[in-house]
Image 1: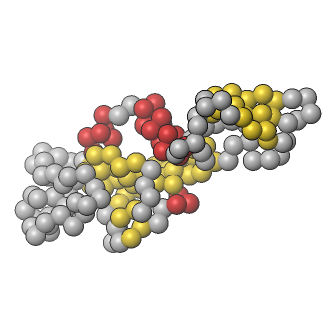
Image 2 (image 1 turned 90 degrees about the vertical axis):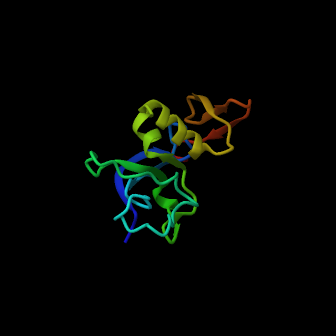
Image 3 (image 1 turned 135 degrees about the vertical axis):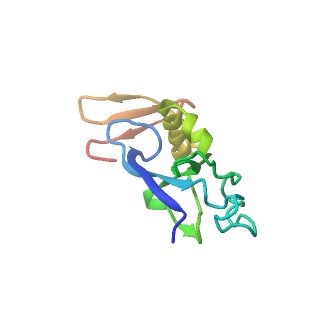
Length: 151
């Protein structure tokens, strides 16, 4: 049984920056409910939190809660979502439930794009010639040419 619930699936540019001809990947938001690993008696974790090494700290389950509160939101690429047991081996982001609840979508989008980009320079512009070739420009001063139909 998985500790995760799929909250959403969105498409993002494969390397974090949109440009003509970019590839797209699915990114998945995997929520972990607050009772997972919780020290609150009756949740089955009286002997400790088995997920403490890879999730934000476990929290007490609120008495007045609706059961939908999150301990964490783990964001992964669909094509790179391998797990060892319950732990994703290469998550893009791991946010606490509070961080996820309070983050704006533009900031979440920026963080996901930054994670997808990795150590690559940020894309800043593209130029398309009449012959169909396109040159992509990056913030570190580098550029590369792509041809029509090339991804």
